[in-house]
Every structure is written in structure tokens, then in C-alpha cells.
Image (cartoon, rainbow, N blue to C red; front, side):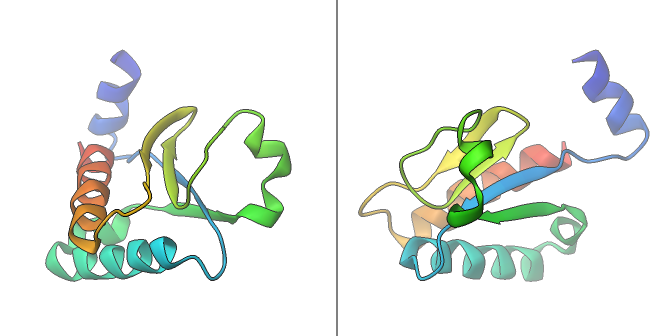
Length: 104
């Protein structure tokens, strides 16, 4: 918590690590939701999401285990993982929560 307060004072946001799979419809929904959320709140544009395609994630998977795509992390703390059957509205709402935490 102390580090978080220092980072906030320096106006440094948490970086997000995201895993996706090319051709994944849930990932397409996540990308669309992020674009819409940035349009709704330009502050979200300052959040850096480092996207890693699943084929390139072999080493990272050892420390960032997941079953579904996409998923978002702060360091080793998973913040979001899409679930089968998740609607676009659910995806957008859950990703908004992650972006809000990154701004906090």
C-alpha cells in the first residue's frame, strides 16, 4: 500500500499485462470494450496494457496461469479473466473495473 501511495503521488499508474488469443471472439469484445471505454473516459488512454499473444506466452504462463482469454493482470495479481458465455456488457463492465483500479 505504501508503494501504491507513492506511485499515485508521482502520477504513475499500474501497468497491465494482458493475454489474448488471435481470432478469439472474447478478445475481440475486450478490445472493442477498451476502445469504447477510452472514448467515454480519455483518462483510460494513459493506461498502458502490454498485450501478449498466447503463442508467445510460454514463459509467462508459469507465473500467470489462466484458462480463458482474454485476461488482465497487475504484476502477478489476476484482475480479470473472461468466462465462457460472458456477454459483451459483462466484459465491458469487468474491464472498466480493472481500468478504474489502474487509475486509482
